[in-house]
Picture 1 (spheres, rainbow, N blue to C red):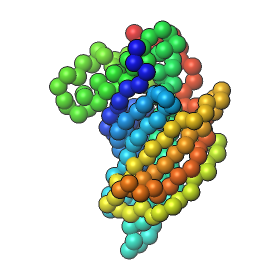
Picture 2: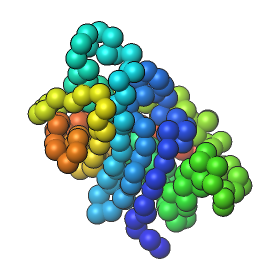
Picture 3: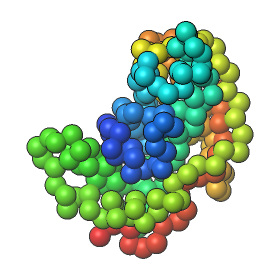
Picture 4: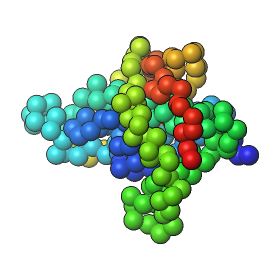
Length: 204
């Protein structure tokens, strides 16, 4: 059984995983996910000059609010926690946890109108996501993130989050945001784990 898997998801699949919506959806794409040696997720947000926040922050200067960068790191951590929790629940039933990844990747094929999409592969996962959608909100417990450089419209903001500790219902994440390879924010976030124990069966 494989212990890690690559993952690439667009905004439509992300909308199934977390409840955030425009204009407060801070993650456009998940670029990769690794379960081992410790859960790590890479995501990104393309910042447009048309963002509503630029009407007031600041007029004449398209400066991305630092709190939005921190929120993007938080949403990325939430996504990581949700995916890891679904894998844990599936593995606890004696199945290959990478079947969760395969179901998500299959959904991405469908939303991108690519050949190979099989609705039946993801049907049970989609139903479970809908059933538990109100529980997919990570509650922040503590935030210690330093903003190191400004971010502007037209830039691509990359998020890298890793789960370093899991203590009952609390998860600790090491987080970093980058623009063009430069670190613009870095620190540690702690939040409640996003999804509770799931009823059996969650798939099939």
